[in-house]
Length: 493
Ligand code: AMP
Ligand code: MG
Image (cartoon, helix red, strand yellow):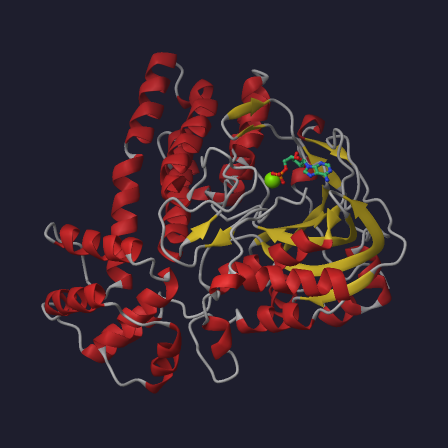
């Protein structure tokens, strides 16, 4: 059998300074953990073949499939605000690209596949835990409608990796619309390699933002479209209580997809200052900072484009500055519209601001569960729904919230929608199930310590339908009991 994957590797056709040629390093005893059948279908890859010995060899990096041109890509980045001129794929290789059944182009990347030219002191490997975390959360994000890289398969390597302790190793096959980062632009901009920068700009326009070509200033149009994609993404994170945890410029994709699930987590009780990452000592990437950090990252991106935005550099700076200055207003509009959806309002009126502020103040002072609070509100627009009554065991509305609900229902009554429509609309954006950190950690612990993947599989399955509560998954809607909370995450690099 030749390769069952029809590769077409456009990135590997770019000039050689964009990457290094790098085959994955074989592992001793690979075992399949999970294959994502739905995603294989999108990619036009036979899932039975992926499960075969040949498929496993490819997912583990033990064999390079025909048509693949494995590369490790070059990029730089600001990490926690500090500039690093050279990062690159230190523990991942891009096997190549495939055109999915939807006619979209996807990267297939192996993460944890061994050392590369960009590994510095690292081993190029990944422990099992981060692979399972990324699989679980990226697929849950997809199910919630958040743009994200996805997980095609996870395999264990049969080898160990040494971190603070000795851990089993694993490899994730990650799928993205591309892995081009703000840091990829920074890599060339910092080297003043304007020719490479121009090549990259054209490549990204062709691959992601083809409408920019028709614009009077394609580079400006690219900047504006990347801003829109990034703001759309971050507003969705905020609306779901997702904390990325490591919003470095090398972790911000031009495609506007969430990437790097290292230290991320969803918050349980609402607290705008929530931080999970053990290395985020200053709280730079705390929940409430995420929109501002996106602004900062996009300013770095705009700065990279200045040599190409206009012949006249003063004019180029003015164009970049103008685009960047529009970010807070654009973000607020998106975020407010998202909140309106969560609260069954058609649009945000000026006098809605105190109403919404009060809700968040109540949530913060009463330490209400972010997810269950919105789900509770959706049950209030059309009461007596048995499915949501079952959640009542996990969420009790305090007096202050009950009083607020009355004010909010008076406001909702001004909307033309029927109660049933409101209910349906709210339920479609307020999930009942999110990847709760204590559940993610428990699944990782059971797999790592006892080779028991049953909870991992159960969670992947349940989180495919985050808006549906059934008898069988009701317990997964529960917030952590006091002793169960897991408040810290570790990058696991
Ligand atoms: P991340 O924390 O995943 O954003 O990675 C930041 C940089 O460190 C990237 O250049 C990674 O490729 C590199 N890196 C992270 N973990 C490892 C590892 N185990 N071995 C080699 N490079 C790594
Ligand atoms: Mg990264």
